[in-house]
Image 1 (cartoon, rainbow, N blue to C red):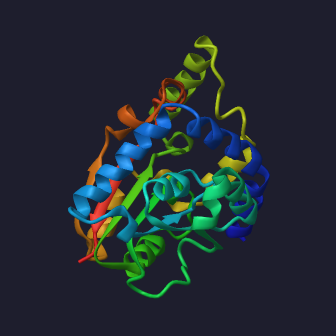
Image 2 (cartoon, rainbow, N blue to C red):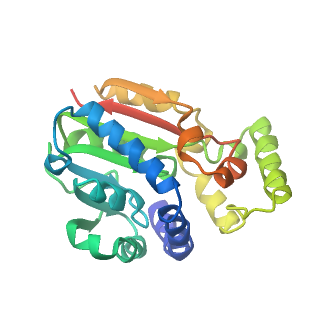
Length: 255
């Protein structure tokens, strides 16, 4: 099954992906991400203390968002489908791990009661899901009324289907080499990841338009997209590596 293939891939990728997160946690990008998440929470919940907010980090991977949200004071639950990723997240969290509730869970089939969380954050996950619409429905289900959903993602594998996107992707690889920086794609099992990407639905769909339409159909309130968030949150190296696939942010509220 695709989910099992996905889990095997991310199990093998866990140590390397954890190293990427460790770099983020030890550079100015950490503060930029912290400011970005805090702004979203303060805008959605004016006057409320961070300590009052119950937040879910879906697809936590090596724990980057879970760590930042816990440092902000939120009560954080972090879930991932891959046990190896959760192990890396606990390790990266250090002493903060005692304040984070970790759980192995399918993003599209959460085991939480309806209305459990004030906010949900996720990054670089939706594109990889076999059932992205079911995942959005689940995230809205476990939000409290008026709760906030924030998703950061990109059209990571559009180049498998779009010739112009392929040309831009190839140009990124050349620019990365010329800049003499680490090529983040070269650090992955490209064949395995592209094999999975060809079988998940969002690789061939234009986003974030799809996300906005999906959220509207599910009854979310005021879904909006920020297509320039990458200019703020990405490092110089990320901007060179991934210029052809800029990160966007989608946010919405539960009715």
